Amino acid sequence: MKFDDDIHNYYERLVADRIEELELEKQHSQEFLSDLCCLVLNQLPPRYIRHEVDMAFFLPPSKRLDMEMQVHKAITEALEFLKDRKRPDGD
Image 1: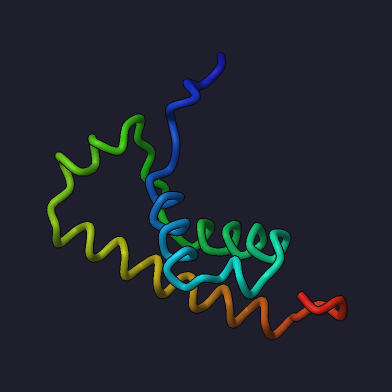
Image 2: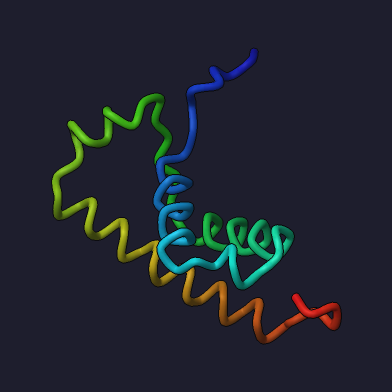
């Protein structure tokens, strides 16, 4: 069985948005950001959707805010973890 290409974890969008807000792509390599995303997403519960509009329609604002706060916390923790183990090649 092949999963539909539209199926994705809603937290992926929230994580990507936060990374953009923090302008982390200007500070770190793509490899570092990939590691960061894996660490962050593994800290968060999966929330699979097919269409972004599904979440906009069914998700109350308080739950959206809670999800965003979970993402902020997970990114902060993952950044600390990666920076403590910074590679000798500069990233």
